[in-house]
Length: 465
Image (cartoon, rainbow, N blue to C red):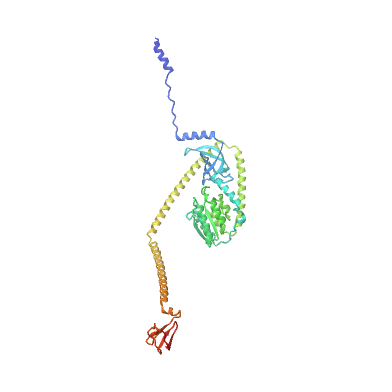
């Protein structure tokens, strides 16, 4: 039995306008999604060249190098594993403009995109590096780097003045080496900050202090390693000219062996590290050691060059894909270990700083209630009062003497003797009466005349009105 026409039309329209079924939903785990994205990115960007400026450079104990590659708008984390880092012919650092070749990957533990570097080449300089080069060329043109203006180091100095932070590890290492190699050498510390805007002025003030007091034979400016921003005070023109004006020999011991600053070029002697400065000062035969060190560095450079050539030949050989994946997986695990190590080190430093501040606060409170300290303050106050009393007594004595001299002058001016000194005389009769009129004396009277010096006795022979 057939359907009516109207019913047949509704059935046909139902097939035409049937509602679509919803798509099947797929739920990813975080690890699966990050792994899929990492595999896709590594396939698409397996060999790229990226240009940028290095910042936040860190070297891990494992030998891996970590830094951030940035330009004016973006930044990209970069990891250079130990095998590639050993082939570098230069030391990367903050502010350095480089060209990096590698592959783009994803660090799964943070879901962060990163560049796994294979080749690192210096390309240019950042803003701090550019300012460093400009100041360096200007001072070189003025002759501040000239060898003939550098002063020789005394072979056996009696006292060394060091300008550095009193709370850092630099001064402890310096004193340990000096005490072990030359216990009779005296060391004077001029405390100064070695990082920040005021560092250059304070270090220059320390150099000027030792030149004024002449209390040391050599001046050492010392600081530990750091980024280009951390070493900025030692690249300042103010400090460079203070070193050039010093009449005492100046040793620059700033940063690590690979760090170079303007202070190194102007100083009379550049030490690779603060510890090396202590060794150079205490070693009379350091020229022999320098020659040995130069031969060692030449051997290292030759070895690195040979190793680089061998590594390049090895890199041209085909490597099994499974071995490459295993090596990359091991590198990612090692990166995770490095990250945990950095976090543990930061926590330990923060805890140590908190306990050190608490100890300083306790010591300051004890000093405030120390009877010896309060007695010293009262003694200083008593000495001040005694000084004021002595000064007041001296002033009073001087005033009394001045008054006495004034009264003596007035008395001298009113004395009758002063009148007699001008040629006048006093005449007395025999009874001692002062005569003021010639009528008071008769002929034959004996008179006494008082002169300025001595007296005269005379007899009146004639009296006139």
